[in-house]
Image (cartoon, rainbow, N blue to C red; front, side):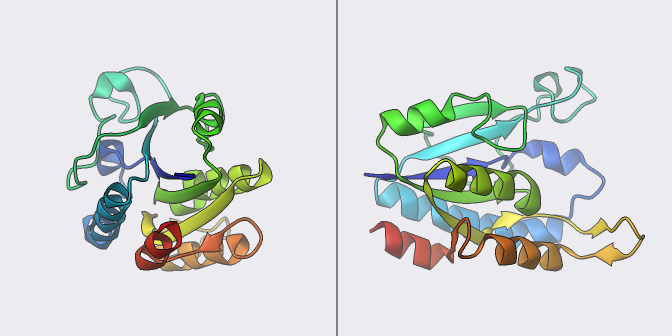
Length: 185
């Protein structure tokens, strides 16, 4: 097998942020769980990536001391081939993940997780620049509404569309869950 699924930052920490939108999480979890089940059925190793940063205190949801650095409630349970904790946007920085991927002979990465335009996009760009082929599964990524620097609202759907636009054909192949599982077969 020369493909691995990177499941980035699908962790309980986000439920403790003011921008969390439970309604948006449900379709994401449905798509992500379908991706996980399909990957496991095909023997694709799944790498669990957790994001940790800030002060290591109970009131910081991205600190180990908070107890929120754990799988997002509703995510199907699975045995990770590897679990890494990252402190940067790219899962390839400071985690040992690149070494493991090379040792496993991985040449293609499937990227899914939270946040679409931050850690998922950054990891995708980084992986592409480092020579991996990347499949980006937008429906299995999640982000949240934001406000532009000019003060205008920017919806999560527009953010995802922008991310997919800049990645497509440059850094990644855009895939649905069904398409990426067909490509991995």
